[in-house]
Image 1 (cartoon, rainbow over the protein chains, first blue to last red):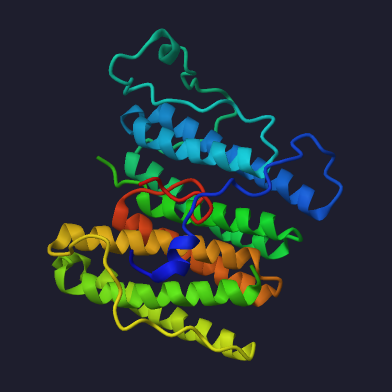
Image 2: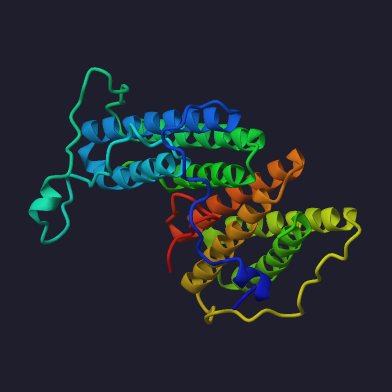
Amino acid sequence: MLGGTALVAAACTREPAGALRANATPTTPDERMRRAIAAAEAELVALYAATRVVHPELAEVLALVEDHHRRHSAAIGSSGRVAPAVRPTSAPPAGGSATESATPTPVPTATDPPVAADPEAALRVLRAAERTAAEARLRDCLRCEDPALAELVAAIAAGEAANSVLLPTAP
Amino acid sequence: MSTLDALEAVLAGEHACVYGYGVVGPYAAEHDQPTVSSAYDAHRFRRDMITELVRARSAEPVASLPAYAVPFPVDDAGSARRLAGLLEERLTVLYADLVAESAHSELREASARALMETAEIAARWTGRTSPLPGIDPPAG
């Protein structure tokens, strides 16, 4: 193993920190931050869902990243208004069952964020949104009182920074 | 774990990364060389920064080992990328620990930014990320 004992010992998987108090009244700064981050993540989910509708050719990869944002919401502990995870509708798993076909299909609504018709422009918007979100979470992390929440928020920032480099260029 | 323990763990991890990129470099593909070079510089920069932070706490910074065991043979561009990705993914865990141990805002900012940069470069090498790098790294 490369890196010696410290590297290995720290590499075990842990439970996401601070996933609790989903319905508590946000009275403390940390609670208000949880709510604000959950709202920001829900906006990202809506942006991805809207982009999938306009660009079904990107649906598979976009659904993966969208699911990351759902997981951020769940981890931050204010996940009450976030819909269940979706599967890409354009690429059903082999041998897909009735259960799979029951997964939600995104339907455009009047409140969806506007999406560029050009796929590269749409992807550019998503990359920028991930980068902006990562920087915002980094700033949030500095204001957390609970160290476990700070770690979680920093990890969300890291996940969004990684998403920004993983989003593909247009096919 | 104390702040000092977390700093020392990160320092040991950065030493391993600096060594590891020395293994990666000669085998990395031509088009990967700029990434190797910037990652190598980033690890050396953070290694020196963390060393100073440990000294500032009147402690002895952990030294690098003369050599590190590499978990699989690195003999082509693909295995070089794989090792680089593994190094970065492991380091995210150490920086996440340091964020949790950073009461001081400057240290928290530095460690959170390092976590972000490390997750980003891990994603470049591996083509994947987990939703919460450092807390719940990609499986395998």
